[in-house]
Image 1 (cartoon, rainbow, N blue to C red):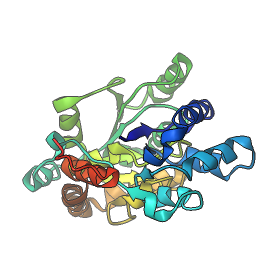
Image 2: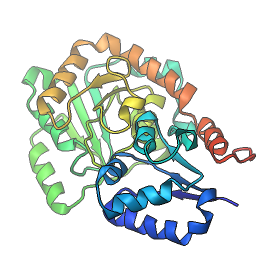
Image 3: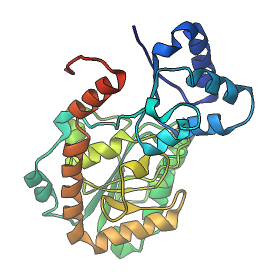
Image 4: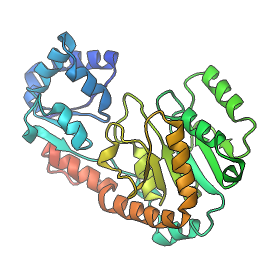
Length: 297
């Protein structure tokens, strides 16, 4: 009755999807594709050539496209009717949501300011730039900031280089490649600021930012890919320039200088996440887009 497919954005992944579209050609009028990302598909569709034309040929025959925000919707607006593009924002898991009192409690102590980076430690995510921004701080400011990194490296060489970079920095720690469940919630709850200075080519609407909102963190990030749909400078935190160590350093300094403002930003983020980025809201919106009369679990 209906075909639902989450699509890839890499060259090879998109070639695989094209073969799936071909196999399902007679059912394309009952097919929905869901793009959890955005930047990669934007590049594929705007290029000239066979790959771009094939994607457009198949997509315009589909029943619908599901995206995370307005920016991703624009990617498809020249390919398929806007009436068949459905916006379904991401969500944070219910167990991560904290109370306003818990947010106020963690901001009762802001020395040091705890900054959390939780994502893959790969090129484009901005983890090296964040470490270098901290290393470049004056000694008196370093004493007021602690940065915790969590995430997997793309190679042993990258891991070795990063550890060499931070080995003499007492204010930087690495907790490992992965945390989950209550340990992840506890880590967010110990953090005042979540930082993801990403310029990753396949970035979409990072769930980690929504998780930071749910757990009452201010956020430092870039206006990259789908992030502007869920983040506003000075409202949800501080925006920084892509690939810019000086911009990151200035945002950290600003956070230290404006400690009293962080709690109101964090509470606003928590309330916004509760109103917009709950699992129940996501499932209801998805069922509506798919035109299914099924009660979400």
